[in-house]
Image (cartoon, rainbow, N blue to C red; front, side):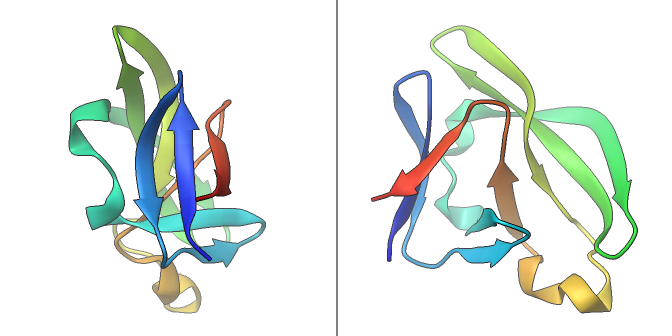
Length: 96
């Protein structure tokens, strides 16, 4: 089933190929609309997935800080989410 991520009334990612881990849909990196993403210096560590990096989501002049995350070098256990992006902080992920 296709999924889309929406924030501030705008589709920021859409894909028929998401991977669900811990209830979060991870979208292929190429499915996000890059004009709505800005790099963040924020990092966090998951005990089994590795170190996450973040993007700010920016739509129509509004910024949702660190609302998207990805694992640039996931652990072997989380290899399926390499080059994939997930969302939180009010980003709606719904069937497309």
